Length: 246
Image (cartoon, rainbow, N blue to C red; front, side):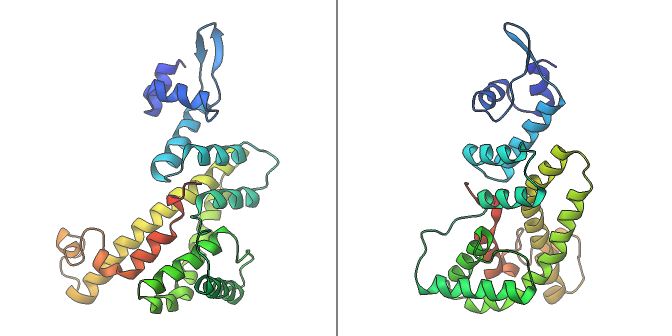
């Protein structure tokens, strides 16, 4: 297809497509003449991936480039791809030091041991969790940390569902891309579902079942479930992976 058709099918403007090619994010089209190039479905798929990582994942172009290089490396096993993506998608807390953070790191390590997780407790995700624990305590909501095991228990089946989805892919490229997209968009989806569940839980606890499913039930806590979430939402927002800038 010509670049105009690629733009129409992907929803990405032609100048932006050309910019992605110059930046190495999108492979160049196959030259059919000195000033004409042909593109295929692979280019369209790559554009959709870039836009998802950029618009929903909130990644910088530099971070997207890092992730795409991992996607394109056939030597990388799937679990290594997931780990590499997590390093670029997880917020950094390198500026935080002191006994508070050390204590939080110990709590994360203890959680990992209790759950029997085969993961590095002091890796990027563990450091992010430690930063959230510190933030909760500084905000006066240290008691919320007592819910760590509840959150961990909820995260385990979600993680298994993520990997089950990845396992349905046959082609190497599709499998790896699903890992990267799932890491970013899965966070956004789970966050949205959690907010919906907050609204439902609040309605059932304070208003009963009357008006369930209608706009009235949301009015009890606001459209985003803020009142129901309270410190939980604040902690979740601090921990969200998609907000990383690489």
